[in-house]
Length: 86
Image (spheres, rainbow, N blue to C red):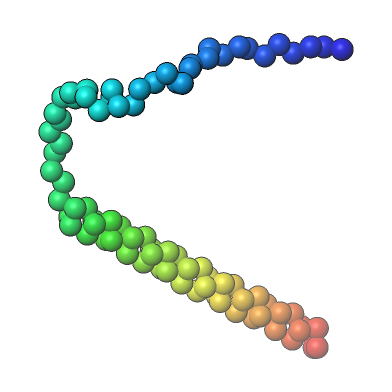
């Protein structure tokens, strides 16, 4: 029977980690760019409305094509029935 040897991963021991010592670390200050959240929200809303609108238009177009196809098939069936009844 074949045996599979799994790789061994290094162990990390966090049992002696002093979290209180981490509070005293002086991290550098980072200046983040300001973001106009109102503009981002407005853009996201516009994108959502456009996506929904395009979906509605596509659905309506499919419905129209389905109705045209159904009418075409019904017309062909009527023509065949007329030919048969002659």
